[in-house]
Image 1 (cartoon, helix red, strand yellow):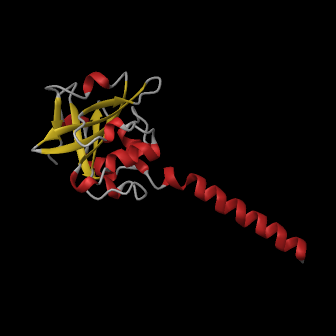
Image 2 (image 1 turned 90 degrees about the vertical axis):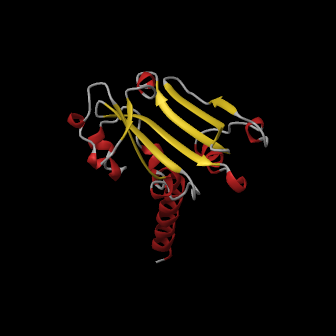
Image 3 (image 1 turned 30 degrees about the vertical axis):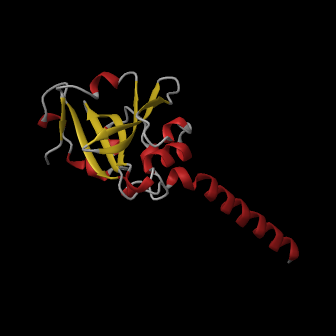
Length: 177
C-alpha cells in the first residue's frame, strides 16, 4: 500500500512539474505560431484570422488583423496591448504587439523580457526612444519605443528574413471584414 502511494505521488509530482514548465508557452498562443505558418493552421490559434481569403486581395498584398493581446496570452499581463497578425500570400508574415506606455505599465517590455529576451536597461529610461534588435538566426525580433499621438508606444515585432520585405509599404492594408 505504501509503495502504491509513493508511485502515485511521484506521478502526480511529474505531471505538476511538466504542466508548470510548459504553462507559459501554452497559455500564450502568440509565440506558438511560427512565421510563415499557413493561415489555415494559424487560425487554430488566432481565430480572428478566419475571415482571411487570399482571393479578396490584390496579388502581393499583406493584410493586417488585430485583436486584444490578452485574448491570446493569458500569462502575458496585457491590459492595453494590441496583437497584430499580418498575412501575406496565406502565410503569417508578422506578429506584432503594440501598447501605449501609459502609467508605466511596460506591458510589451515585460512580455519581451519574460518570454523572449530582456531588451536591456537603456530601453527602460524614461525618455528613451529607439529599437533593440533581439533577432536570432533567421527570426527577426525587434523591441522599440516611439512617440505616437503624443504618447510613447512600445512595440514588439516578430518576422523572418523571407517575410521582412512584405511587412511595410503600399502593399499593406487593414482587413475590413
